[in-house]
Length: 227
Image 1 (tube, one colour):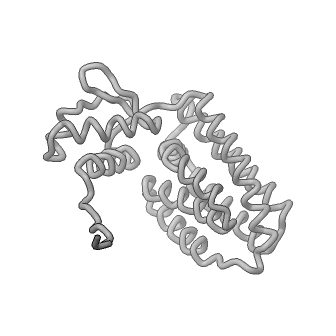
Image 2: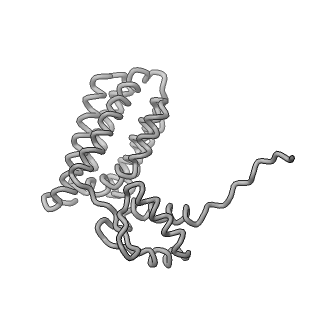
Image 3: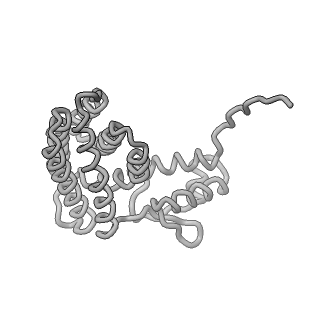
């Protein structure tokens, strides 16, 4: 019997629909707390409702959307409990991450983080909120990759969309983007210099400030002033 590796199949319509809807959620084009309908999404994408339904089921299983009767859905908002849980996970993982990186900093390459930070500075200056949050997520995922621990990478990838959605509105708080850039600069300097305890302290401070900004945005939305 001829043993030939099968050709890669074209991306399925349901996967294409999933990627398109997910991108729209993360960019903010599909907005939190607004109802969207399967039939309208299918029409906009130019495909049938079946792959859209499959995509929505996948997004629902990941916790990004809530399905509604009569083929509708909304992007999930975040409760205080949701926010506390995500930041509890981040704290456990990311404090260990910077400690491990600091211990081996002389053997590591930081060019990717430098490039991300440079781009983040430009995004902050341009007030490009969505781009800034995407770069923020990339910064933290890149830190995880430096540990050479595949489990840390997997966990960071699993919560990356929640990080993005939480950050998308939190960075609209006046001065938050500039603060994040400064926090990242100080953190990267400490990690690069192998300053283990200072790296942990700076990461803890950064996560606490981010948590507070997210809580202010989602739990008490009327109490903040946007830039």
